[in-house]
Amino acid sequence: MENIVLVCTAGMSTSLLVSKMKEIAGRNNIEINIEALAQSELKSYNKRIDLILLGPQVKYLLNNLERNYKNSETRFDVIDSIHYGTLNGKAVLNQALTLLNKKVI
Image 1: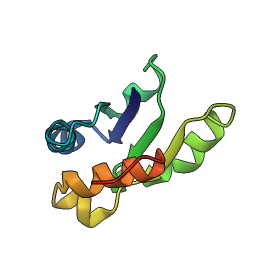
Image 2: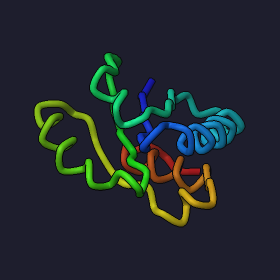
Image 3: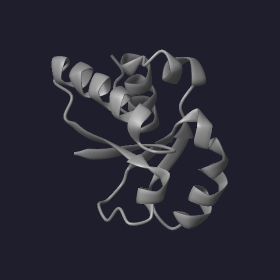
Image 4: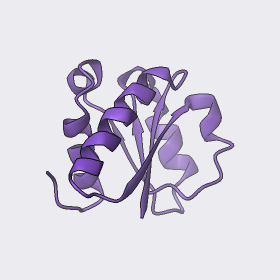
């Protein structure tokens, strides 16, 4: 099962988006683990991560993440600000599935 982590400043706004993504994944029988973290929690997160999606407000972290995870298979991207702002769980889930080379819904 793939592990996706959404990262924002405090983990609050991404928590709402994660709930919507999990609901849509469940309705479509997609087995995937999705969690929300504050940027400060990411350093101590000790589970395997397949994909990190950054909230638009922390997109500046992208270069550091690519450098820190360069020897891993972890992928990275920034969530579209419109999808983030409207809590479009389906669009963000499809973004994640595309990045993981999975079938989109």
